[in-house]
Image 1 (cartoon, chains in turn yellow, cyan):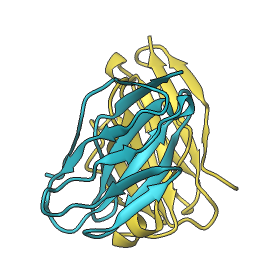
Image 2 (spheres, chains in turn yellow, red):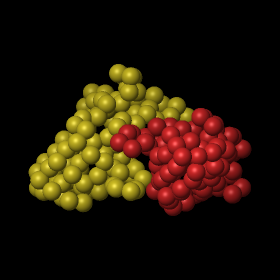
Image 3 (cartoon, one colour):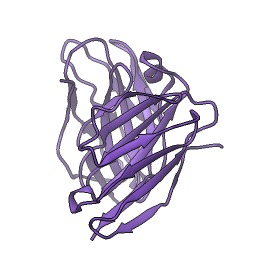
Length: 118
Length: 110
């Protein structure tokens, strides 16, 4: 597609519920990133995929967070047993480049999924 | 670790005023530097970037120069418009991902 598409746009979850957030990157983009943006803050890195390989998951805040990209295109971020502190906008970005090349190609961001845990 | 520090907002200006939003970064390695803009209810959009020292990124009247000696990448615009009202994020490109500052809200009044 023309841009990075994320769904749903908004999600309200009850505390303890599991959620799955979807990201459709730009076709052919090798790198895919997930970020978490709390209200009034800058995006914080969660995890990075190069094709189907998850090369960096150092930003995932707990083992309740899990991400996958099984065929190297669409990615899903899953949060188990949601807590109120998980409320944030979850951003997905993709890049044609990989490794150091990603920053030279640039990153295209989706509009994000706003998760509210009540 | 890698970090980016940018001035706190909101920055409130009248239309046609001069804009500066300060940004400094940690000097580890040779990062690329970016400014992203986020309009209300929208995702992040790349505004400009610079990949090496002394490079100047520019777009839509905005400029920023990669200053290695001061580890800075300040955003400037000579004459802001109401439509420039948004949140601006400075970011540092590491090995494979971006580290963002906390963002600076710009409010431009007619």
